[in-house]
Image (cartoon, rainbow, N blue to C red; front, side):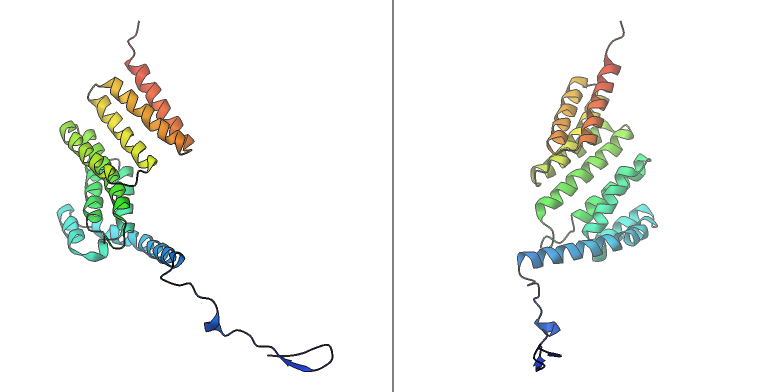
Amino acid sequence: MAEYDPSGRLLDVVEPEPDLQPREDPDSLLGRLSLVRSTLDRERAEAPGLVAELLSLPAQQGEERLRRERRFHTWGVCELLFAKSTEAVDPAESGRLAALALAGAERLDPVRHDSSVVEDLKAQAWAAAGDARRRRGELAAAEEALRAAAACLAQGTGDLLVEARLLEFEAVLRREQGRIGEAAALLKMAAARYRETGEMQLLDRTLNARDTMLRQERPIL
């Protein structure tokens, strides 16, 4: 590109070539984070279609398809299956979705996914499976799921929100078992974690649930 200086002389102004612009080094920390973000965004965008495909199949066939085909072994699919399991009204459907989330999480590529983060996801999926069992009246099976969730949690990241959610699940199970004092203590522990992480809505919800439970159990004079 040519320009003139104030004296009228012609100057050559060299503009940087596009391929000379600074590039993000894919081996740098920022480069790796950028790759992880783009991969996660892509997986989350693809997840609704893949999950819809699985859920359109009979339960056993859908689980076999997920176990067999690597295209379902993504964080986006597991994350969405878990979210749907917590939203399902029917406990049987909730249990099915949680089982699919667990099966998918077991098959996530350990090179691409940090094992402690995967264990957090598995802990929450086990809790969802356990709560589905509780709602079906299968308290012994719910207790087994709780133990599995605790084992995963012990290998997780230490995320306080994950801990709080598992404490809430255990509290509900203990209430169903008639162990009201334990349930109240567990809800208090969950509330402390919500307070520490600044989750005030979850804190209020948990304390309200604890107060309601204790009020209902208080003998009428």
